[in-house]
Every structure is written in structure tokens, then in C-alpha cells.
Amino acid sequence: MDFRNSDTITGPRTEDVLPTTATSAVKVVIVGGFGVGKTTMVGSVSEIRPLTTEETMTQAGVGVDDNSGVESKTATTVAMDFGRISITEQLVLYLFGTPGQERFWFLWNGLFEGALGAVVLVDTRRLEVSFDVIGRLEERGVPFVVAVNTFPDAPHHPVEALRAALDLPDEVPMVDCDARLRASSRDVLLTLMRYLHSLALPLG
Image 1 (cartoon, rainbow, N blue to C red):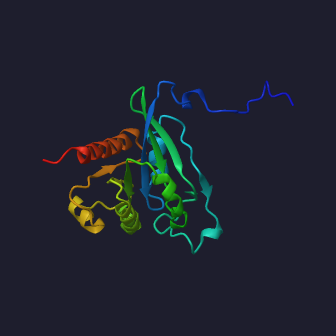
Image 2: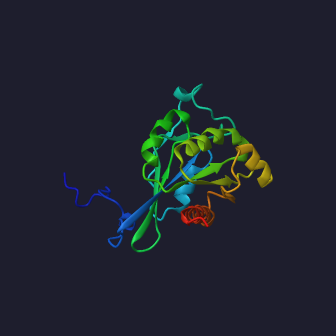
Image 3: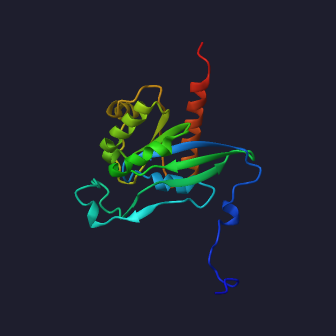
């Protein structure tokens, strides 16, 4: 078969190729419960077309997956989401979004390997799905910030009330965001970077 005139894509798009000047990379993980906006955040802020592993939800998940509050959701991440941001010509930031459904959490071990820190996305309509997520990060000793994704129908709570509900230490940053917007997602990542920088500063 002659593929010379075919429209078949045989490799990455030119704009998705890693710049030849890049010499270093850092890794950040986006975590949260099912349906809180992790895939949306990676897609909104990534400079390349994100790699997603979303699959259509089927009857097989009934009674296994808890989709309370997001019953209209028809697809779910089964492995990871992946995006990239160029910080400088030499330094790139890799973003990994974790699967939200608990039956896929065994994949977290590999996704967190070598990560500088994490963003925990929270949906105030379903705060309870974030409890185990935060607990796992604390067990691993992974630094994280909390980003409250502002869904249109989500209730608004004072920061102090949210901190108390999530049992967050005072030093852990919490910010509002709209995961659909590139600038908002970028600001969340900047908050994480500033927090990581503060942790690296010597005490005294």
C-alpha cells in the first residue's frame, strides 16, 4: 500500500515535539477524586495536545465506582493524563493527572515516583472524595496544595470551614480555581512552586 498521499499521522505533531534545548525536567502530579476536573486542568494548561486515557463508562462499573454528584459523567481516566509546560528553554514541567476512581489507585505508585509535589483538586459538592486522597499524600510525604475547583452549582464555603473539613494544616496553601481556564490552572501551579520553594528555604 502506498502511504505517500495518506493523511495518517505517523508521529507527534511538530508543536508537540520536545524542544532540542530542553536539558532538565521536573514532575508535578494532579490528584483528586472522581470527576473533580483533573483531566480538564491538564488539558487547559498544557502547551502540547495532552495525552489522555479516558474510556467510556459502562455497566461494569455500576456498584463499583461511586459517581454520586457527577451522574452525568460518561468517561473516566483509566491510567493517566499527561501534559507539558516549558518553564525556560532548558527546563520543562511534566504534568501527570491520576485516575480518580479508587479501583485504579494502584497506578499512583508509578505516577508519584520522582514528583516534586502535587495539586489536590477539590469539589465542594463532594468533599468526602478528597479525604483519602489527602491522606495518601500525607502518608507518602508528598508536598501539596489544595485547589478548589469552582463548579457552577457548587456551594461556596469560607476557607476556614474548608480547612477544618479537610483537616488541613495552616501552612498548606488553598486557592480557588477554574480548571477550564489556562490562566487559573497556571496560577495553581505557581502557588505550588512557591510553596515548594518555601519548604526548601533553610529555617532560621
